[in-house]
Amino acid sequence: MQYVRVMPQPAKSSRTPATPDAPESAAGSRAAAQRLKMRRELAAAAMELFATKGYEATTVDEIAAAAGVARRTFFRHFRSKEEAIFPDHDDTLIRAEAVLNAAPAHEHPLDTVCRGIKEVMKMYAARPEISVARYKLTREVPTLREAEIASVARYERLFTRYLLGHFDEHAHADDANDDPLLAEVAASAVVTAHNHVLRRWLRAGGQGDVEAQLDHAFAIVRKTFGTGIGAGRGSAPRPAATAPATVSAHGEVLVTVARTDAPLDEVMRTIEEALKER
Image 1 (cartoon, one colour):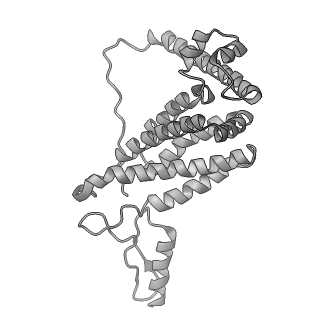
Image 2 (cartoon, rainbow, N blue to C red; image 1 turned 30 degrees about the vertical axis):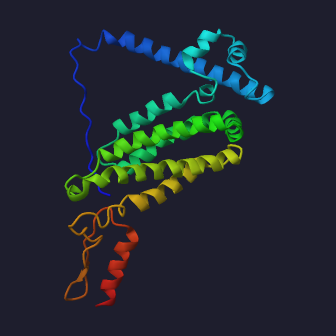
């Protein structure tokens, strides 16, 4: 799979200078913080009631009362009690997208996506006791499991769109119809790797170095999809990972040429073979 970095273009605006907008921006930030605070309070109340009364026996009215708000306030934040279990996904999705939009030009798109989904892990790790309780609950209630799957699908769609936007069109011009499939598979691999680590961490009660575990899982994904997924596509052969190594006539200098994304083991193998031929 080959990618190109597409630099985002700032949106044009017909509005007057940014100074008058500063108070509005600050007010918007405060409103967003208050909204998230209320969503988390409702979610905490819901989790406590689900643990004591059971999910099916708990009503929206009881959740609202436990949080000290009216029923209509609950529905301003959630469409159902199922949604109250996942109060942070909307905001986390926004943060993940912000990571993609602000990615540096030199970063490989798969690495960018891996950084983006780390926002999800940060969400869970910020409140491990609630995350563990929620994990146990979703294992017991099918409707909550379905809601969780729907949330995962939103991240996969976001990352698929991002990866698809960074394909090298010239390299895949002959069979560009495969691009959506490749982007979706790569995005799914990143999400699957993340969720594998997340579930293992939750089953361990939220203990362990989850950051190191994530990095290890993402390294596997990067190795698998970062260079090899596009092999054999199109009529033109894919360039070799490394060019043949050559040794000078006096045997004092070894010269080899390799792509910057070539795996280290391939580069070393080429060098070793050249040395054997001396």
